[in-house]
Length: 148
Image (cartoon, helix red, strand yellow):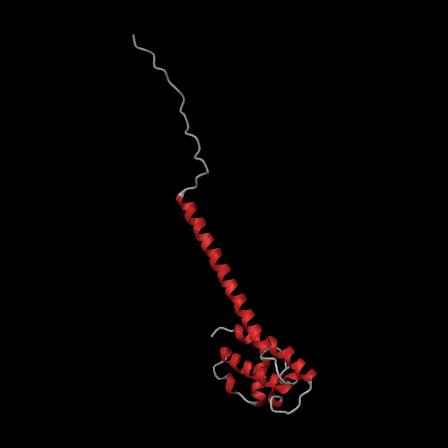
């Protein structure tokens, strides 16, 4: 007589635990952390650069009104080279049209006209300089943001 075989049901192994993570997940997390750190570093550097540009413009606004206009003109010419290497050589109406860009005619038809000769006049009205500053500061910052 043959011995009776004891048969048992198939046992399914237990599901793997979610922790500790598999090596692929660790690599994915590390890549994500590096990506976020790189993005944060770039944002911080961009913010620091913008702050330096604002401080540069604001620091130039000392002295008499005509000296302030001359300083604004100089900064705008320096910044214009970031958009076009030959822009700082423009004169008169062409210079003002360049400063207008696609944003209206505030320089060529408005308070920005003071840039043409305001730096050479012995007296300039303080409120005219303030109106020019309200135009020149954002334009300077926008030009400084341009990539070469």
